[in-house]
Image 1 (cartoon, helix red, strand yellow):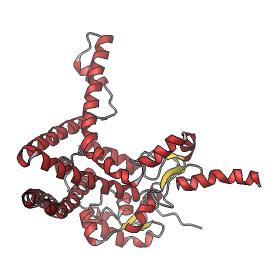
Image 2 (tube, helix red, strand yellow):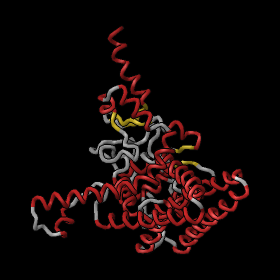
Image 3 (cartoon, helix red, strand yellow):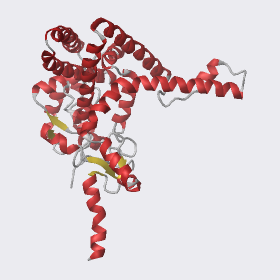
Image 4 (cartoon, one colour):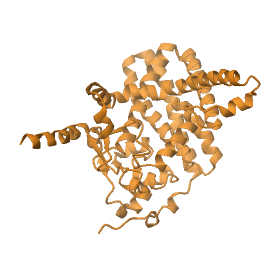
Length: 371
């Protein structure tokens, strides 16, 4: 009989302590080199464009590390102070061109419901086998195409460069329409009442709106300034490639850490948080250098057991609790392509499936009838 593992079985508390010195050093050894690489790329481009690719590879890796540190700030784990985490998270959000506070609130929802596929199905908006079966053949092919690994690149560009700007524009446009609608119903309705009655799908609280607004002001302002300083063509060519590749990498890592063969993908009824963390999150074995650039987010099972463990304690916590992680999936870089098969959720079996396997299962009844 399988023994149920409880959260109290794990040694987590000693690793949940934030170290401001380590956190400050991580910010410095990430942001300073990333800034310097921009200067180096500008100077190198004046000599030869063939000098740019290796520099841009490093820029992409440092950009990804900026995102991972922003992620820790969103969990209030990087620094011991909540205010410092908010401030540094906001600044890293400007570097990543994404409003950190709204992003972190959405990410917290993921942590709260990890492995509960009735509640959360990842950034790829995966659907159930039942809904997939109801789609037309064309829609099924489009669904599969939009979740192809190569779509990480246009998806990454949209995720960082376009989506946050679009969210602000659509949200404000919706608010303007809401003003006219309210005044049409009640001409004497005051602005505070109008604001209080407005509900946007692009932000859920005033704090999210202000973070979205100020992030956009800072990001677009930096685009204008750097385009003027470095030249429009140079800046946007390098920036677009770096941000697109950076986003593609961290979306890929996030995807494979939850979508794999045997991943815990349960209905809300009977769902277990601990199993969601241990069996619904993988341990991705990366080379030491890539672990550094990803800020050890590869120890994702431990991260989901307690999001308050800062990245610089994840490996030690993993090693201390490794005897309890026998049922946790271990992946290598070679396994990553296979993970992109699992884009359907089968509610009947509480499992993830590939479209190929689903199609084979649909053919079985017909073959039995034929026999």
